[in-house]
Length: 242
Length: 247
Ligand SMILES: Nc1ncnc2c1ncn2[C@@H]1O[C@H](COP(=O)(O)OP(=O)(O)O)[C@@H](O)[C@H]1O
Ligand SMILES: [Mg+2]
Image (cartoon, rainbow over all chains, first blue to last red; front, side, top):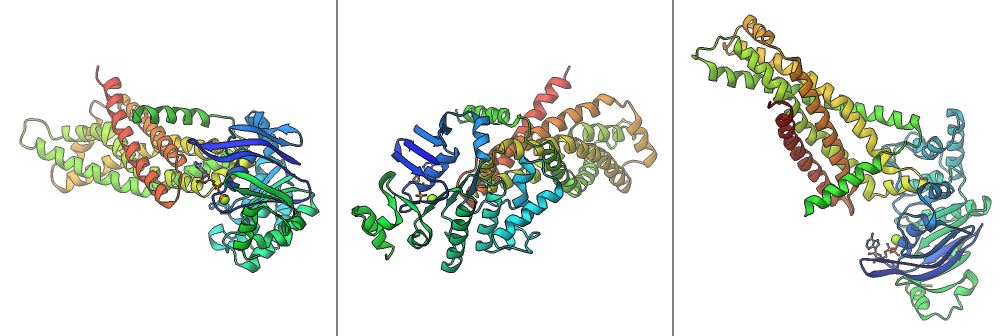
């Protein structure tokens, strides 16, 4: 479980995260929803330490990530997998080497073991026979899948997905959603998903946090969302045609 | 003021690079890869530039010496010294500031704006160390070699143009090359080349690493990398000459 306690972040005096507290549960898909610019990505980057928070605690199973030094943070980071909005695959490496990257960097696996794990992960995301292709030569949906395969290569405890279906067609979006959901349940991962795609929330969401202009204004389970009485949330859902 | 701010940030950037690499083997492979890209990849352009600088400098110096009282072979000596001391290290480095500098800045800049650098950090890799240090080491290893190669080639180019334009005979040219040769001039050139190699790779990496935004900013970083590396080369050319050559 990951817990945020009163985190705050501002850029040059402009408040982007305003006193957010939240819990993200194990084996669940924890959704963070909100309009563009509401602060979802900044919150995620704070959680993984790419951006430092101004105040507050980020607890990974009770340990406050904010207070750790670089090397201690590294230990937690090795348990984190992240799927970036633009996938962030390494352009200079082919699909196989992208997925193998964390394995070569952080494990003492032999060549054969690495290849076996790579193929296992690629198969898990339904990609086969693309090992030698480069990121520039595969489609958006395939890139996302390679991104997921790379994120799960080291068996993470935590999976962060920033807008996993941005830029994908609806059909591919659903496939990616299902994949993330399956992996979360199968490996009992704490998964956090940023999105403004209400469809994917209804397909695969467990817990939901709604952020409006840097503030958490609603939280609950999927079943509660239709009966939610928060005006901002209703407005957001209405705009998404739900 | 902006200069001091940059200088401070650049220094901090350099300090952040020198950490023990995560995986020796991965780091070594990366360095070899960069040596290939920086060193072998610049072979062609350095060859071309060197032959022509040698050829042109011989003609220009030769023309100025005509009908003076100096013996013909002196031309060979002057061509040798000016190419070893100045043209080969400096012109080669200026060309590499353009080629290697823009390449490094745009590669790192693109990785920065497409979050590939963030992806490395998330995995727990020190991105500056992983991306930049191999490039600096590769530059330090290969650029001095390119400069030595350039010296040989420019002196050869000089012989071609000197003979072709009837300024000097081959025998006299060789006699000139052998007259009063100081090994220190090669040492000096290598000190320059090593310094320039460090400046080019580190300044370009610094600008690449600072890139934020998109494709436009990557282009701007690339331009800055070339301009500042070239300025660095020229300034240190002067400083090193002042310190090491003037007595
Ligand atoms: N590095 C930064 N410096 C300054 N402002 C930033 C930075 N990153 C994000 N912001 C601002 O924070 C706000 C929230 O952005 P973001 O978290 O990316 O929104 P989204 O919910 O669409 O992911 C935006 O107004 C954005 O301009
Ligand atoms: Mg975002």
